[in-house]
Length: 50
Image 1 (cartoon, rainbow, N blue to C red):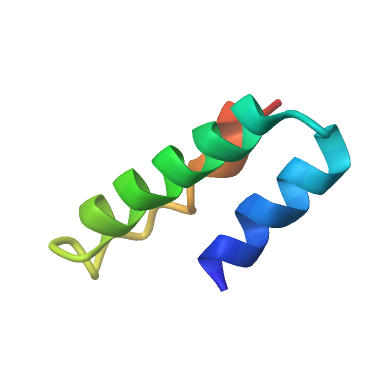
Image 2 (cartoon, rainbow, N blue to C red):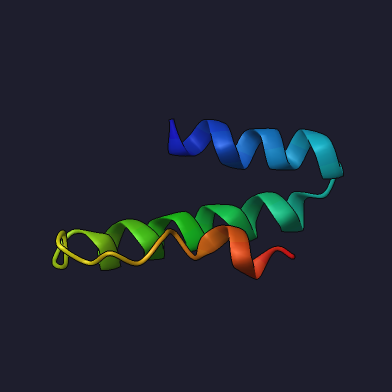
């Protein structure tokens, strides 16, 4: 599912850089989310793209 988000981003922008950036953000997000499951913070990957 996470890979689908990256792929959609790539298809919309047509930029491989955007795809790789999203992949990197998602992998970081996965790693940081696992230890702190109780964190009320929303996913920040969307905020970085604004």
